Length: 162
Image (cartoon, rainbow, N blue to C red; front, top):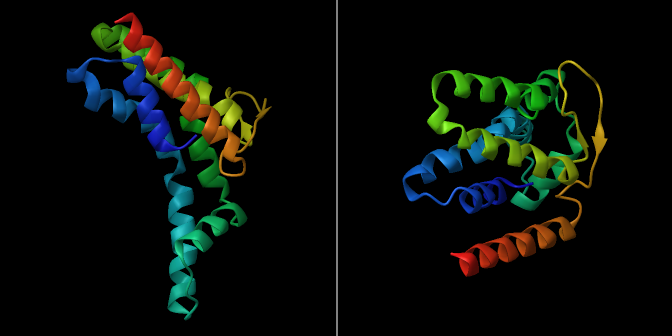
């Protein structure tokens, strides 16, 4: 799923204003794992630009799908999208900052949302190559539609109950 949706889900689940910056940060934290791939795509774009090839943003997004990320970028991404890493962070929070355990829930929600909205999730990385095939959110507009509808329904429901 996209970063904005993760932030909105985090803010939906933890509705405490004083925790909002932390919640948003943790909501998008697993996507730090995408940074190496972002840099690879931008590097390719820059090389083409230096060679005189000009492309617009839509073409850059199309390239995102075409450029095969390096092994490092894939491993980095899978590491941050692993339930193993989530469990380690949860245990660490339990030991040193129990009052912040709610952020562990936000991280978990990010991982759960990404499983059906990504081509291939590897939730037990690096200990297992077990994969779950999903629908890539950039290839299917219905993933966005369902996500927005669910956000609206959940927020309306919470508003009515409050």
